[in-house]
Length: 159
Image 1 (cartoon, rainbow, N blue to C red):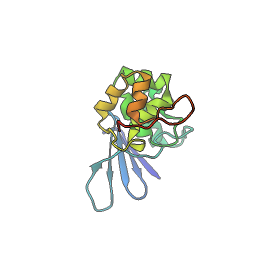
Image 2 (cartoon, rainbow, N blue to C red):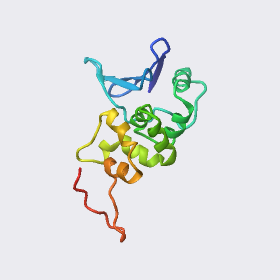
Image 3 (tube, rainbow, N blue to C red):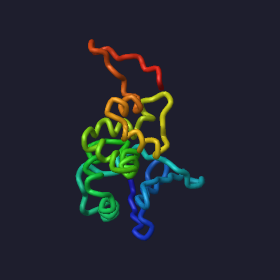
Image 4 (tube, rainbow, N blue to C red):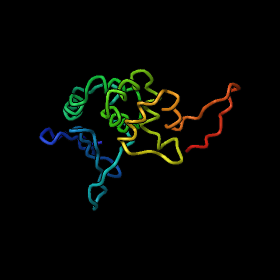
């Protein structure tokens, strides 16, 4: 992938296949993608946005990374993909960061519930409200199956 950081407009441009993405961090994270010959459209990239190890030689990534709060980067860095939605959710308020620090996997599932549910919730403001739920409620809303005492999944009838 080819990276370019536009410091003035605070976005990281990622040129890859099949399209180009622009990842904005301010005022809150949002992303656009563009296929060759088409217009920019809102998107949520699934690829890893923060590398496992910082590459100090890549100035674009260093500048982009410096605009992400350290505690947010600590939460999203371990996940190999789908980091963008988790980062977006962290910006929705203290409850989201609290959930992510207490249970990073559950926060990841809430942020990426579209991967787990038949009827996903993709509105970021609603995902922020999901963080206010107790752990069991957040897990249910994220589409994480409940288990009976015998280890069998309990059928989900709400999604």
